[in-house]
Amino acid sequence: MERQFRIEKDALGPVQVPAARLWGAQTQRSISNFPIGVSRFRWERPVIRAFGILKKCAALANGDLGELPEEKVRLIVAAAQEVVDGRWDAEFPLVVFQTGSGTQSNMNANEVIANRAIQMAGGELGSKKPIHPNDDVNHCQSSNDTFPAVMHIATVVQLAEGLMPAVQLLRRTLATKSRAYADVVMLGRTHLQDATPVTLGQVMSGWVAQLDLCLATLHRSLPDICDLATGGTAVGTGLNAHPQFGEKIAGHISHCTGHVFVSAPNKFAALSAHEGMANVSAALRTLAGALMKIANDVRWYASGPRAGIGEITIPENEPGSSIMPGKINPTQCEALTMVAVQVYGNDHEHCASGIEPDLPRIKFNLENSLMLVTALNPHIGYEKSAEIAIKAHREDLSLKAAALALGYVSSEDFDAWVRAEDMLGR
Image (cartoon, rainbow, N blue to C red; front, side):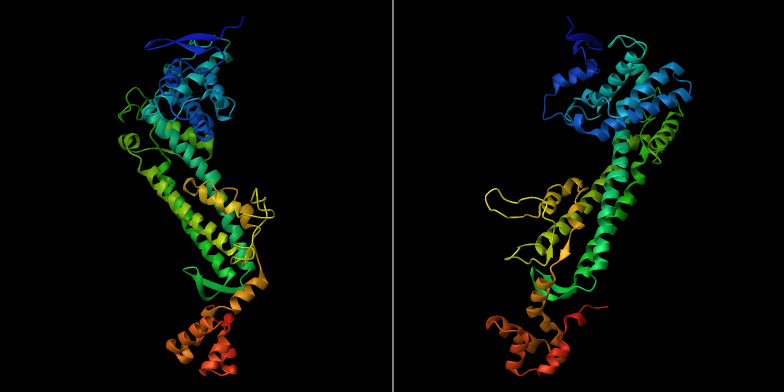
C-alpha cells in the first residue's frame, strides 16, 4: 500500500508531509499555521517563475564562484528550470499572509527545488541528500534579500513583457482611429452638457496622449526596480555570502530574463525599503486613472442605442441582459474599469479596434447643439449670443430660427459664421 505521508524534519522537529508533494517541513508548517484567505501564490505564476529564475541563477553564480560543486549546480539548475517552466506550480500552496520577509515562500521554493533535484538524482524525497534546501538551494541567500529580488524580477518581467506591450497596442489602435476620424466633426461636451465642436479624431488624440504620458512614466520607474537585493543576505551586510555573489547572480538573471538587472549599490536600503516598488505602484495608479477615464468616455459616447448619446458604436461582444432581449452592454469598458487599479486591461483592445462613428447621429446632434452659438461671439458679442441660445432652448427652436427671430443676424451671416468645421482650431 502506497504511503500517504512522509516525515520531514526542520529545526523544530519532525513534520508530516503528504508523500507525493515536493514541498517540505517548513512549507507544511506554513500551511497549518496560516489558514488565511485563498491559496494566492499557487495562482501567481509570475512570482513562482521569478523564484525559479532566482534559484537557478543563484546556483549558477555559486558554481562560478566555487561555492557549490558542479553536480549540485547541475541538479539545482535543472529542477529550478522546471519551476520556471511552470511544471510545479501546484507545489506552491501558500497564502500571502505569512511573514514580512517571505521566509515561508522562500523555503517553499528551496524545498520544492531540492526535493525535485533529489528525485532527479534517484534519491529519497525529504532526505536532503544530495541537495539540501538551505545549504545548497539557498546558499549565499536569505529570505530578506531573496524575496525583494523576486518581487523586482516578477514586476519587471510583467511590466516589460505583459502590461506595457498591451498598453502600446491599445495606444496604436487609438492613434489609428484618431487619424481615420480626423474629419468627423462632432459635438463637444463639458460637464456632460453640449459644448463647441471637435472632431472624433481630436477626442481620440487626447486618449493617445494620456497613454503616451503613462507609458513614459512607467518607463522611468523601471530602472529603480532593476536593482536587486541579493548578496545582502539577512540585514544587508552580506554575511555568509561570497563578496561577488550579488554581481554574479545579477548577471545570470539578466541573461536568463533578457532584462538588465544589477546588484543594488546599497543592500541595506534594498532589503529594508521599497521606494522603487512604490514608484511603480504610483505609475500604475496613474495608468489606471487614464484607462478608467478612456473607458468611461467610450461608454458615454456609445450610450443608448436610442436614448443615449450613441455617437460611436462598439462591438456587440455578448448579450447584456438576462431579462431584456437584445440588450448589448459595453462589457469590455466595464471590465476595464473594474480592474483598472490592477492595470491588467491587456485584452481590452477588443473594444477599441471595433469603434466606429455613427455619422447620421453625430450630424444630428451637432446641428442641433445650442453651443454652436459660440461662433457668433466675435460678431455680436457674448450677451446676444447667450440670448439666442436660451431662446432656442426654451422655445425648442433651432439656433438659426432663434437668431433670426431676435433680429441679431441675417440668414446669410448666420450660415457664414456658424460652421462647425470652422470651429475646430488648428
